[in-house]
Image (tube, rainbow, N blue to C red; front, side, top):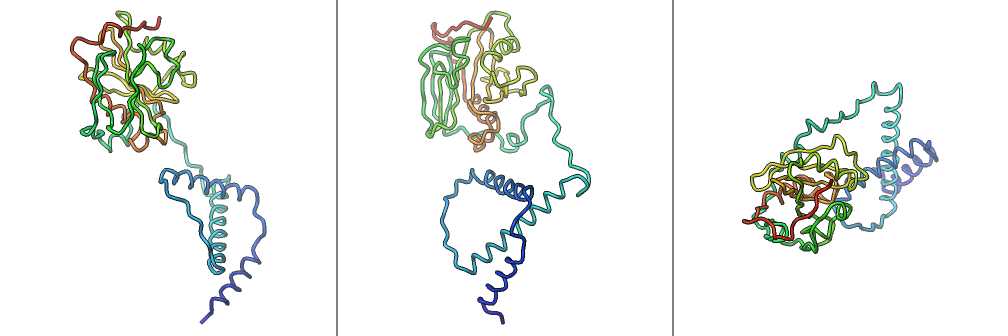
Length: 281
C-alpha cells in the first residue's frame, strides 16, 4: 500500500512535468469562469473563511486547480470556429407590444401583504401598505413636472425603503389636463427623467390600483407603475431596474410594485386641496 509520502512525491512530480504557463486566452477563459461563479454566489452572503492547508491538501488542491483550468481550456477551444459544431443562437428579444408578465413573477404568485402596515397620504388621497419593517419618509411637497422628474426617489413622494436602504418604493400623484392620455404623458416625461432609457418601445405590462387598470413600465434604471383615473395620474415607482440584484428577493421590481399596488385604495373625497400639480405640456 502506498504511503501518504509516496502520494506526495508522485503528485509533485506530476505537477512538475506539466506546463508552467498557460496560453493567455486559456487563462482568461478560466478567470472568466471563476469570476462568473463568484458573481452567481454573491447573493448567498456566505461568510468568508481562511483555511490552513497541510501539504497533502495543498497538492490535492493543485491537482484540482489544474483539472479545472484544463476543463476551462477545452470549453474555450470548443467554442471557437471549427470546434464543437455550429454556435448556439442568442436569445430573441420580445417586442414591447407582446411583452408579458415574467415567468418568475408568475411562478412565485402574489406577494403576501397580510403583515404589512398601512400608510395614509392625505396629500395625494390614498392609503397604501408597506412591509412593517421598512422605513417611511413622507413627502415634503407636491410632486411637479419637470422639477421633481429627475429626483429618484423624489422627496415629493411617499417613500418606503428597506432598513439597509437598498430598495425604495415611492407613491405619489399628479393632476393632468383633461383629455391627457397616459401615452402622451409618458412621451413628455421620459425624455426629461429617463436619460438612459430609450423612450420608444418600452416594455410594459398590465397592473391595477383599487380596481382601475394601469401599466407597469420598465425603464433602464427603474420600474414605475402608472394608473390614470380621470385627470389624476397615480405613480408608484421602484427605483431599481426589473432584475437588479437588490429586488431579486422580491421576485423582481414588477412583482414588488404589484404588491404595493394591491394594497392601495383611494380615499373618499380624493386628495387634499393642495395635492394638485401641473401636468407636462
